[in-house]
Length: 220
Image (cartoon, rainbow, N blue to C red; front, side):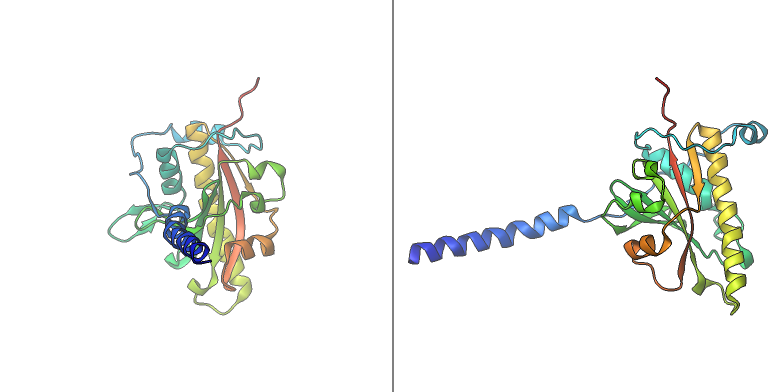
């Protein structure tokens, strides 16, 4: 009996030692993005000519540099002195947050530090839209309006402002993708209550749109 107790105690000790290591290894960690490249891109008129929506994607992962460039183009800081961004926002409220859903988990883009802050380690890409392809696209951006940053009482005005500001950001994504040969589509077809629950959003946060980004699937 004593031997059995010793074996049980030893097993418990091993579990207590190993489990914290496993838990730590599974944690989603912050990602400091690479500096965005400012010397790339094609002439604006050519980019506008090639701007389009795509729904057929390769599952190939976006390189770290590509993701960095994409997020900066979307809503990064382009004036360090003031913290103002690549897209306008009403009264400079900057009420739109960009969440980045990948196979590794869910992150929140921090434009000030140009980094990705971890939110969830779960792959929730399938919840970012109703179409079947979204679960395999390497990056799904989720544009979330934080109504607490809009200091006006009218709900309708908050909806209008956040929709307009999301449109500016989404178009930046479209133009970057057209310039760099990436595929993208912005989507309003989202089960917002289900996605908001999975993202653990606060009541004052509202999902506006989501946008898929990846490489176009090569024709066989």
